[in-house]
Image (cartoon, one colour):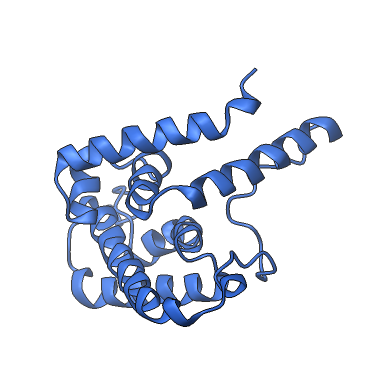
Length: 184
């Protein structure tokens, strides 16, 4: 008799471990703060486990990212009300956040010049992603980074497939324009 692991079925714990770092990076892009991102990811994981632990493995990814998206949207709604009273320098991205950078692009096997180029590109990409409107950033990260298809992304964000395609196209176009200096 085959075990779950031998049958190719991923346990809920394995799934959460696998999406954790990318979910943290997505939340960090959305909030600009590592601590807030950690809270949002933890809340999303708890809600996901409470509501969807018995769902089939092939439905986990879009459902988890829907849960995370809901937390991110709630956070933005709360901050839009509260943010009117914040000073401009309090809204900036938290560059001093503790912990490893989940979107670092440097590779140890690169030559020093190559590592510098990769670091510069990674920094430019992160800045460009932060400048995208929230919905474009979410669609881009789910489609291009997480590899969800159009229907799964639409389900995760609770929007139409046409909106997914439009937001993804606009995000790619904006990122290409922002990163054209790195085009060889």
